Image 1 (cartoon, rainbow, N blue to C red):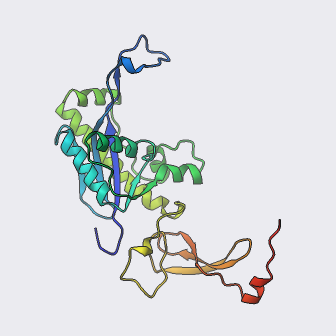
Image 2 (image 1 turned 180 degrees about the vertical axis):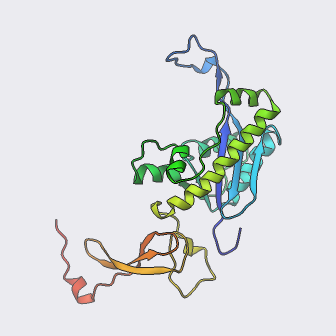
Length: 257
């Protein structure tokens, strides 16, 4: 992490399934009184964007309290947290862990859910991370034995835990690679130039912070025109904050009603 860039955390969690009594295996509605053990976080892998150090913590290696504390500290330190479907899954589950551990909310941060970008900008046959990664020419997720792996992990099997660790870490590696590929497509990405206090005199790409910008045409609204830029680093588009219409022309622009 550096002082003139935001702290961007990539994170992925793995959870245990709910244990419950059921009358059958087809279209069951599980009542609260049928739950034997609710789901919980098994482990997480995390990495600061652009750094090589991969972090991993699990209830097996660290115990639940220490694992949750580590996750809380990382998110508390982050300016942005990148995940895949984390808006509905990872972040609410971690918040539940923080609540139960009486740690309080982590400090406010910006969530970047890459699944939302995939759904908003593309129409792929599948929005799953593994499929998206392979479409982008990346390695893809680590194959595993499915529920059998989770059952063995919950039973404390050492080999299963090694497989789970490998699987979890690969997801975060993929997350970073997919983030870079999707970067110019992410709508309303936080403005990276806000953190760069060293760069004062040059325009910067709001998406990646690069100063290598090319003037490319004009951006139009109903009443204004702006100089448009194309980043030669990440490929994102941006525009100037101030409009470039002459004052006389601006005064005579009408808007339909």
